[in-house]
Amino acid sequence: MTDIAAAAATAASTGPASSFSMVEEPLDLVRLSLDERIYVKLRGDRELRGRLHAYDQHLNMVLGEVEEIITIVDVDEESNTQSVRTVNRKVPMLFVRGDGVILVSPPSRA
Image (cartoon, rainbow, N blue to C red):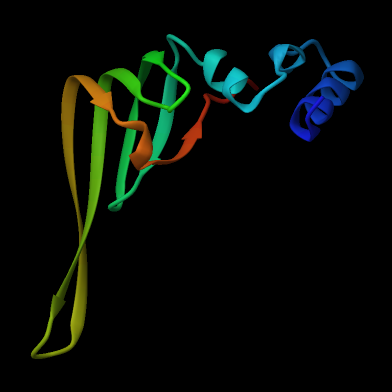
């Protein structure tokens, strides 16, 4: 049993009933988030929030009802100042290639 699974099993046995008792591998946390809203951080200062419809072992994902947030840092070379802006867009359905994924956060189960 992995350290993550052992910690999840301990938490499940000592605390209230939880879906963490079904976690044996890291991707099990993703499996438990199917058809739920998740947060995904991607390379290139991109963030996604959407409903997880499907995924595979490479973390390729199909998300629905997606909100994409892109953070752009502009540098003015003359004055040497930076300005940060965000661009938001909504996408009904999106395929995310797994090699760009940095972090996947399942929904809060509190």
